[in-house]
Length: 162
Image (cartoon, rainbow, N blue to C red):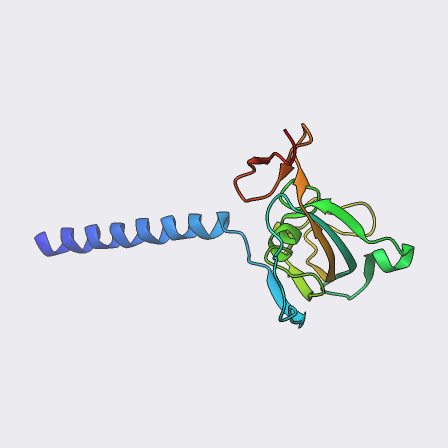
């Protein structure tokens, strides 16, 4: 009888462990994949970081079909945005960090770090993975809402003139 109770207790513990790991898996986001298409220049003195203003050229496609969804080359206007300010999808924020001017990357972004289960308009269906080929054209110091220049990851203002 005691052995039987120990077996039941062991099964309950295993079941609880399995359930807790299952919950962890459901909440986990998939990682993006970054492929370096053109390595950073040897003389790279600055890598992109949170709060920087980036200027990038890009081509975006649906990962599964390869269908183009957007391209800055079509308009001739690179995209300018502040890294870390939520102006681009989460996978873009992650994939464009630590880049040098002139570097090219291919970002394969799962739906969980793109537009998720809602999709976006007619061009991006729900749960679609996205692939972006990006080239970093320029990096500038970003500014906060009061116009102070942000120069490090802690978003402390840089006072050029007093």
